[in-house]
Length: 293
Length: 340
Image 1 (cartoon, chains in turn green, brown):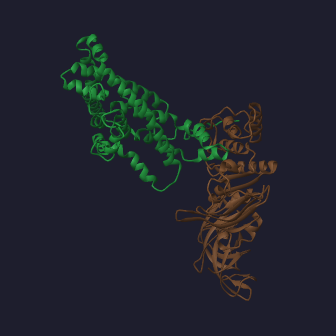
Image 2 (cartoon, one colour):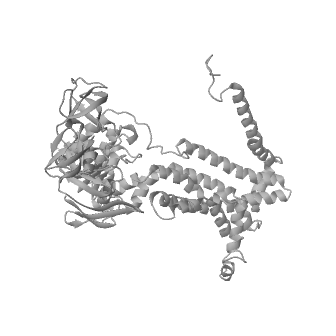
Image 3 (cartoon, chains in turn green, cyan):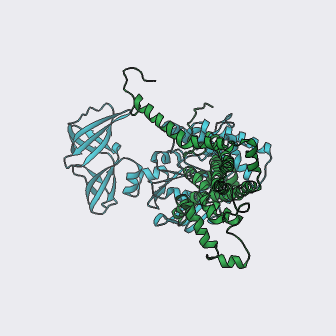
């Protein structure tokens, strides 16, 4: 469209290639991503708003929503603190095993969540490492809220740290050293120098972490025991409804999860506008505006 | 305040960055730590600041042993090579930061007045509302200096302060830093790998190599009487010619110079480009011209002696010489060291 006549197109910019590529991506995107979402919405209301409302209002569904939100309310702050501490330790200090720690943090990303769930079974289960001790102390971890939280936290542990580490690495230690040399304490340095420079990336990590906590299925399904109305989170509840041949109920519950996802995506886009999620040092590398005093 | 380092050493993993350095900086002195990269100069500066702890030795601030005092309580002003201005704070907030976190509380009005005073000192009045990314590199470095001075430091430490700036701004800031120093009289230690910068700016130059001090003295002492071939080579362009010394005279294969301090035997003569002259007719070391480079204030001649040694020297702009000419190189002065 914008080709000046007689000029050769840029590499890969031939109209035929461009149309084919864009078309291919649009069709795949529509089929793979958009269509299922639309189906969820349509199916959820296929038996009317009343049925939709009744499904949501059902005590089991309400409890599943409560459990999912409760899990997020605990797992997300814990992983945020863990992520900030880990990123701080890895990027602002030198110690033996620094690289090893980075690898450890990344493990949940590469391990299938189901493996994590099974691992927790082996650690806290009745036949597991601490199982007998926990049972004699009458502490329930598996098939209860603590197990769900632990599994969710395992799966989402890297989210905040992974957003922060590259950014903090690029920012270096100069700012913290400058603040300390001016007499600031460690906390003061963190809150008035480090935090303001990582806040968007931090929020971005929190949003991604939250989305994953609420949507986690595999690890949670192993450790929760799937007790209806007791240890079912929203994703597990959706599966249960579906297996009960209550597909409209399943879709109604799924639409809530999808709604949460949409809210997350909007938050993510807004944050990205603020420069989060980019692997650069936004404020430090801004172009110099020549100013005459 | 007087600063003294006694046998300070620092090792990073297996790299011995600083090896037993002792150094005294008098109160009010402006001292340059000069050396090639890896010579330990920045590590020494960071140890004085407390950003790095010495493995061995002691650092004294006046009579007080400051070796184990953490950086936040050491009372130094540190200026970083890349400024390290807080990007989310304005120029004014950057300068006020040290006063705001200080234990001796000051009122808002006091801090504001001091910021204004410092902005005038670094000639940036009216810029306190700008953010660091809205001002030029030279201005950022001046803000960094004002921020460091705001906490009334006992000593000012600058790490390659002008390294990231272009040549003109660098020269201007150099003169300006010298003015500020004579106005405030604060003990100042700065690190540079730029010989010209060290010689132009410092009262005293400390030359480092491989974690050790190899020579220290006024710019005049180190330039006129370098104590080793390393210092001679590091401070500027040099030519080297082999010489043989006998009875207090060094023979350079066509020219001879007095060498009263050297024993008989082999020696190396180090010659600056301005220590040599060109003569078409005779007297001196026979050589042929390979290239002539014209520069604003002189002509640089690249020649080879008949013995095969390359020589570079400067002649006045009106001297007629071109590639292929044959003639003689005459020596006006030289530094002689026993052969290595």
